[in-house]
Length: 252
Image (tube, rainbow, N blue to C red; front, side, top):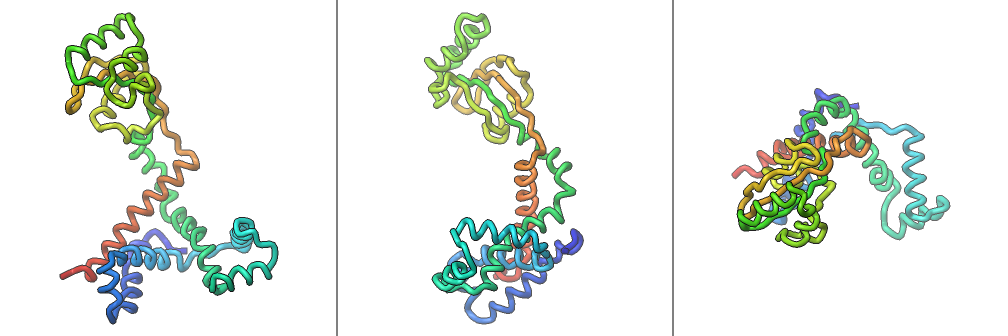
């Protein structure tokens, strides 16, 4: 299995393979049509997973799912499926096991980093539910703020009547959404608020906003979040590898 130390050198092997197939006009054509980076990505992935092995149980599970998805009931059905698509069995093996090998590669190299990476990303992964009124007149914004603060009318009533954004259709209620979704200035207001706290009118671009955080939903390092962060770490690494391979290729 490829070690963490070795993976930063994979781009060299990928570059070597690319050079082996770019002695004629293939590379200029790939550059011309804008598909060279995608080819490099796939070559790097193949290099990365070349030493990853799957157990017999893992391969069996993969093929069981494949048979179910393609509605195949026998080896004869499989041969007919391959013939119809002019695919060899070796190419099928490569295709159906590639994803599983890639997931093992990700976990082998970045699983140990997930907790620290999660803490770095958590502030943007936390989700919020909030109420929003936005108008383009400071006087109206202040009047609405005091009506809500004094309990004269509800936030929902005033948002439905006065808010000039799409949130008017929901009585001003938005979310749940990750804190990375709203405008950074608005996200900062929400991140530093307490649930139920009504914030006075704040200007953002052409709008005057009245905001109230309704609920904060802290992010958890559950299985979906783990997979998402693994994918992010892998993509960051892969993009750097692609850049290294393409440096001599795209140089004038």
